[in-house]
Length: 308
Image (cartoon, rainbow, N blue to C red; front, side, top):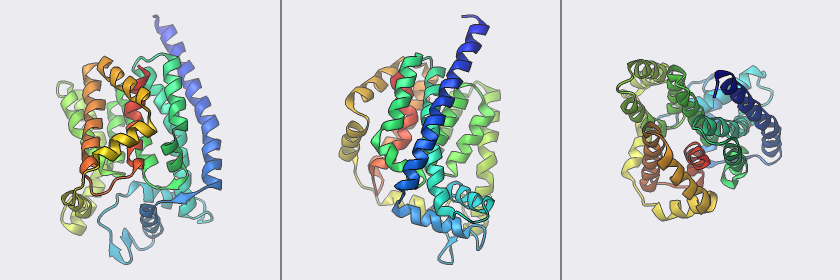
């Protein structure tokens, strides 16, 4: 295939991704606008968003030591940018809807980057758009959608060897949910012999997380809030529920296709996608609390592999 043909195919892929976004953006916006919900954790994120630019990173007058800052900051900045006319709660749901609209286009582009056919990539992108557990999150005030789309964007940038930008997005994911920290050792291991990628990715990762680490060191004496990690000692066993929800939400055919696709991937992607997916499932198998929404961040791992 000539360079001109490759560039033409890439442009065509971007047109497909843009069309998906153009359709899904308004659709998810209407879904969120008419049927908004808020999860129990969402009330805490909302309180942080209300306070962060007024009294600081606190809830009920006490410094907060559990949730991470990106999602509440986005809510608060959106509220400020619109003169506090809409409120951070509206922005929280809007961010979820926008994140949901971005996931299928990124799924399509990542699948194509991993050399799936255009038909298979489009099919998995459409599946990402209609899986029920996803739709429930895109109208809800919760952190899962923005974290998931951050993972998808990071993987797409990584697949194009945009290591610096991939590192920045990985860092942003790490100040959204803690599971993103599991990606860093895999990234370092994969790129041990690629000094440029290793350095750029590490610098990019540190750019968003260093201010957060410094804040926590100054406030609490440790780099990351400790209350979240205390929950590791209150473990449960959710394997049966996770397996049943994977079958219900993804379906056995899609999971089988993802397994076959993972085997076909080159070694670095087997380690990257497979390693993170396995670590994520093990963590949530023993976490003190489980709900099927915690499976949504597996979308950028399962669907592109299934497209192959």
